[in-house]
Amino acid sequence: MARIRIFIVLALAVVAGGTFAYGTYNYVQSVQKKVGPGIKTTTVIVAATDLDLGAELQADDLKAIEWPANAVPEGVFGSPEELVGRGLIQPIAKNEPFLNGNGKLASKEAGAGLPPIIPEGFRALSVRVNDVIGVAGYVLPGTRVDVVATVNPTQRPEDVTSKVVLSDVRVLAAGTKIERDVTTDKPIETSVVTLLVDPSQAEKLTLASTEGKIQLALRNPVDKNAPATGGIRPASLLSGSAAPPARRLFARAGSLAVSTAPVVRSTPAGDAPFTVEIIRGDKRARETVSQE
View (cartoon, rainbow, N blue to C red):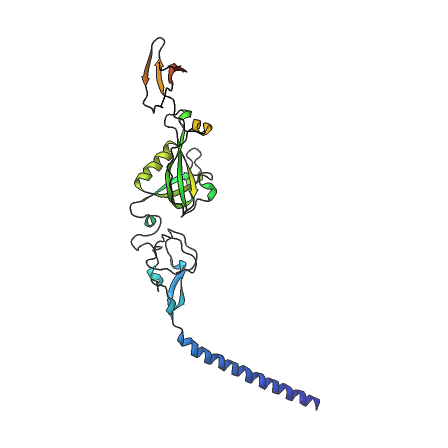
């Protein structure tokens, strides 16, 4: 008798559970039928991974997702074929939709790489750097820098001058490239920074990097000030004042005769003394001459 009761209770539990599950399933299906048709979607092409500027879009870089039709951004692409082969002029993050006219896509005719990134009237110029010149790796694409040049125009130690020659310059690219060492005939890594400059700035940067040394000074991108500087020389650095150099006369002497000729240089105010340099063979001597 007890066994029969157990079977009756079990049968009732199975029937009740089945009835409840069936009712829940029917309720969920009815809700989906009411809600589902009311949400319209549109196919939108987004980035499948993080993409850097200059990259050429491939099919693997793109994926299609369904986007609510009432919230589709303006200028979206609905087909990957519209994007394959185009270049990026700004980085794009993963799952970010591609938009036409937002300034991140190069035109179909421009291709990929660095050229589409360069605005009209500007040039891209690369300079070699090291960890110090490149501000310990903080000079990255999109940052802005000042270029400080150190040049010695006369090859005299006292005439070495450091000066800011370019200000608020945008960095287009930064990285390493492989070059071949001509002495050992082995490949070496060279760090290179590419700057966006106009033609006149390109001339200054080329001369500074060729005739002297350059240093990049990282700056805040919201700081647009470019204060004028007069440069600095070793004497001014130690004295704390921008003292003008002394007037000099240079002379070359033979065994008996001495001839002097003035050199065109900036002359200080007041009664600064003249300096005469006498060269006899491989020996040099300097004499201070009174102006009286």
